[in-house]
Length: 43
Image (cartoon, rainbow, N blue to C red; front, side):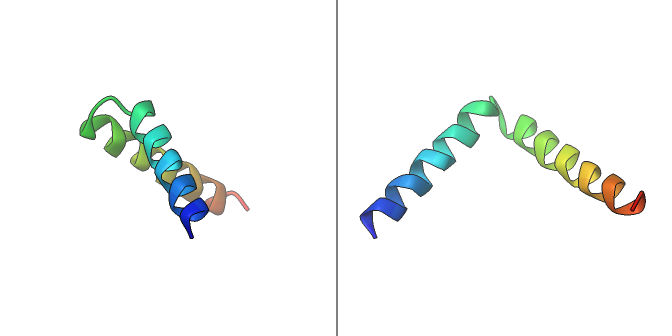
């Protein structure tokens, strides 16, 4: 359980450090969604 919690926290910190602001995080999520949608439409 402790290992899972530690890994989850590390993953969260990595994601947060990649996005400097909440706005940046929203843009990242939006871009990811658009990529998935684009890929789904072309298959």
